[in-house]
Amino acid sequence: MPTLGNPTSTIAVLQKYNFNFQKKYGQNFLIDTNILENIISAAEVTKHDCVLEIGPGIGTMTQYLCENAREVVAVEIDKKLIPVLEDTLSGYDNVTIINEDILKTDINAIADEKNDGKPIKVVANLPYYITTPIIMGLFENNIPMESITVMVQKEVAQRMQVGPGTKDYGALSLAVQYYAEPRLMFTVPSGCFMPRPNVDSAVVKLTRRKEPPVAVKDEKFMFRIIRAAFNQRRKTLINSLNNAFDLSLSKDDVSSALESMGLLPNIRGEALTLEQFAELSNNMSNGIL
Ligand code: SAM
Image 1 (cartoon, rainbow, N blue to C red):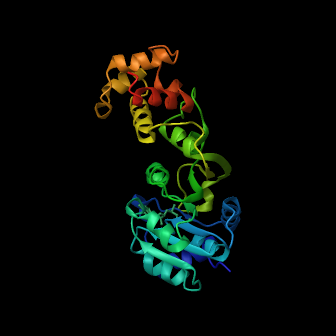
Image 2: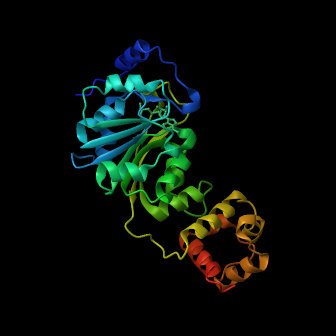
Image 3: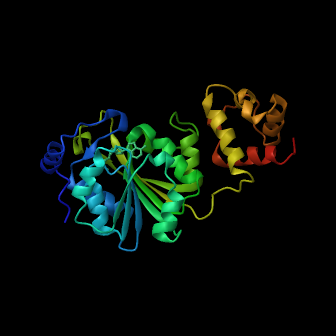
């Protein structure tokens, strides 16, 4: 049975190890058993699963994962938390703790070693300061993955789901929707964390698609176009792409591609759907222009 997940046990562990929260690591620990149980059921963790947890903290959610999964690998950057985790997880023999920065971790090697290269599940209460690089990294590095179930800032959860015409629409929305089917599972009040974050939170589940929803010849090129389009989102697409030096696209290149798609020359990137970004990038990587 998990021993953590409420304010009393969390405070006891923090005091025992004289632990001070590190703001720079986005440390907001969960102290609500209902939320923890809801995350495990949202992720549909079973005894067949190998789960990667990003940022286990003092091991609160890790205990719930160890109870429900076959194998858990937890990657924590803060070395002060390693002795704490060795203590709070000492009752479990299905967990591996790795003291590393998740952005520098070879997750493919973990999936190979612990799950024979088969799809893993990612479950985490993410450090909010690096939500986007973590999620983009998981997708772009082709990690074998069934799903990502994560706590994120509520605003970021909304950004993952929207399309053109909303201010939240951006490169993250397009990447998430290209690689996965996003679903907002539930929102989480700030009182469920210690210390309380000063933003609202939500749990999202991103189920990896077997096939992308659009046919793209060169994924990397499409995402370079998308990034360039949203880097200068108030500019026209022609100017944004022309200003992106790594793309080496002239205004004429972009303008003829837009024309062939029946789009106006003054259109902004934020007005294009995923299908249109795919078509634009296919046109331009085709050598048509
Ligand atoms: N899972 C715990 C919980 O729910 O109570 C803690 C979640 S806390 C929001 C985020 C955790 O991620 C912290 O333990 C923090 O030290 C860790 N962390 C921050 N940056 C990290 C990184 N680059 N790589 C791995 N872990 C990181």
